[in-house]
Length: 605
Image (cartoon, rainbow, N blue to C red; front, side, top):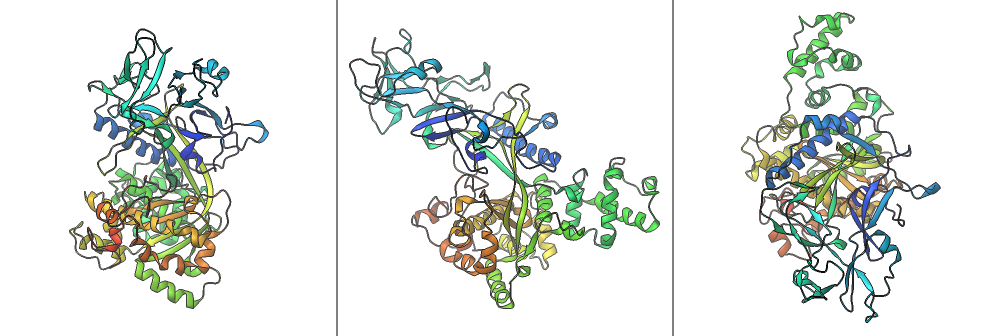
């Protein structure tokens, strides 16, 4: 990046280098001004339509919830915004051939002399010529240091580096007075000329670019320390890219088809499915599945023989009856089928994705299988898959402004990225290939746990199929509390394994990340390292028992117990991961889910 060089590993760049993000180098804080578009160095995105659909839903949810919660005078996002949403792959470079990834500037440009308190905001030309090693006060031999605070309005979400000045003398004679060095709220700016003294932050009137966006009364800005990384944090979503070889990316009903495949609705015509899928894009482009009637729609199948026509009739009849209330669940089903190798097995595609079950790994003998089956049953794991080469897309969809309150009811000031010229919504995507493991939990045990803890009022399921349907329909059946607890269990399990990963996989915990498929009772742990070292492959073949074996001991131990376990059941010492490693900002975690000592009947009881 221009104005100096700042480098991050490619994956973590999304969490550090997005527009309006800030970083610290050599005790100075900087703000990202702009990012440059990719010039062909990034991998291809196979299915931009699906990426747009999924990410817009997330943007719409976060942004509209912010508007409702804070009663802002801003327009809600609609489907029209989805149509114009821009997908941009940003330029990743290590300064080869003189390229930069973008631009950044020093922020804030306010400095003060630590010795005499002389306070000054330096503007572009002035900043280049100023000597930071010498205070401009001729009677002082002190040095300038950067002022560490900007203002944040909790009412409207505005971030400002505008500071109070003297009404008579402007900013020429300002001096910082620190009445209590440890308490910035006591700091004042005094005019050395007339003695006028004010808080260093101005008042927020909730005007953004000249437009008043809140009906609330003016309020004071809250100081935020820019060197603590909480001014503007990118929100990053990771998803599986639909492999091009599947030829499914043009089908409008892909998520519903995925649900039917997952539930076995098309098993009766399984042999004909490859032929059915080959003709689907053309047929679906001409008909409305919601009004499907075989007698009226026979004309679309005239080129097929009678047997295939009957298979199409069964397929569309089943498809018509499938429904999702939750788009999130639909996307999770699709990802799950790709990650477990269901698609490439069904269509005999060797080149799509290399998925191997634990027991099918090379060198996996009966002795290992026997011990691992006991371990899996003890932890509630049904299957473990190794994916040696998977295509993922991580996308920055916007940023959370200012401090985010903790708790399930907290609503961040989420602001989506926009094209500065067109004002269209914009996402910044990074497609990459990596290795991963998929942990598929025991569906029956998950549902039983929800019932035992009274989050669900259901009969205990007798089969995996019954349990799978219950999990899939939690959001559809208005059982969101049960879904939240299910998500918390899976999220916590993922963190437990990632925290232990460095000892056995060769991957540090900040070189791993996660993707949760709560409705499917599964989670993915993948490497974010720039270099594939085969860490997951090695540990599955050699150290799985050691990696998983002592998790119960780890879960029961935190240096801040009993405070940690009594309060939230998770903290920075035991379960928190780096921002770019966690999919949900370390929210919705609780060790007690597995311990079962305070709030829960334990999952491992």
